[in-house]
Image 1 (cartoon, rainbow, N blue to C red):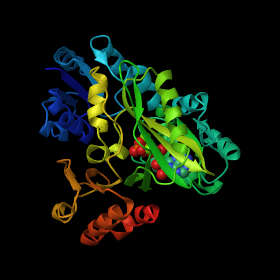
Image 2 (tube, rainbow, N blue to C red):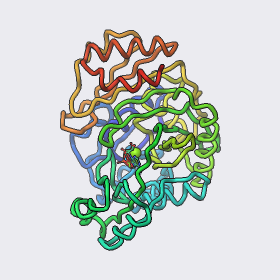
Image 3 (tube, rainbow, N blue to C red):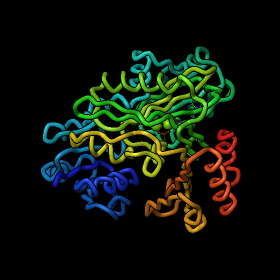
Image 4 (cartoon, protein in one colour):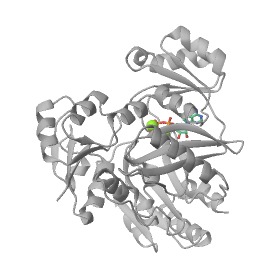
Length: 379
Ligand code: ATP
Ligand code: MG
Ligand code: MG
């Protein structure tokens, strides 16, 4: 039986392991935390990213290594790649880890991005504000996720506060100042490329964030017209440039009807969780297939789906389980403010039916506000 090695033991590793099981694929996970939630469904090696003795033994036990987490040091990925197949390749990981490299690649591939400038000193922050303008967002170039490592500036007087929040990280990770985009919509395209170059995308997903954290997703994104074709073509260009193998997500803003690139995630992605029940083959199944060199599955949607993220703590499961074609995912994590602890996906055969089912979940959980933007997008 093939063995999939996963660096990082969060919910993404957990869902990869669950998707691998029916394919006869065993999973072995590495995480520095002994209580990493993937460890509840797959064997776990407890080691940090510089524990080369443990990583050497891990490499000897797996057929291919992949990531649940893009912030594994690129050096660790390269070291492993000398011993075992690593997919996606360390180069793709390195590009996606750095907002500057990522945005530069987007532009080279014909995908515009918000205006940006790198910032390494307090002085450069003022210079960047003069060029990029306000409102703007100051972000760490590396290691940010779920909106962490970001500071929003409404006007130039916010520069001191922004520097107080993030300046200490400037010398270590570098910062980038981005123009704040008053976007009409946020979309993501989840894509997969096989070892043989076979390339597929799932239908575009529309996403809503609250405080920089994904709150709701709806797929297929309604009323996107020609944006699907454009997003698919851009994702394919990126994948080919990086000789990418596996699943990745490309996060997009729509402004004046045009796509702007926000960032890419070199892994399965939260906005693709709906594919578990809502698509013929899920992002997790296709990632396992891709990295093991198996044929890819059908990325078509079965019908419309919407996903709720459960942040901080889980609501009442039975309120969701009572709704037809609603699916519950508990990651087995301790409740903690801001932490992603689970999600639910509601599927249907049409927009009206999906809206009705979302309304049932919202009413039972008192989450009308969370669902409201999705209901209005469904019309
Ligand atoms: P993730 O968990 O997706 O990796 P992250 O910490 O890398 O998140 P971003 O994707 O850069 O953060 O930002 C999180 C969210 O904040 C975006 O999805 C978007 O809603 C908002 N945002 C980020 N950058 C901008 C921008 N330049 N203009 C407008 N909104 C933005
Ligand atoms: Mg990110
Ligand atoms: Mg993001």
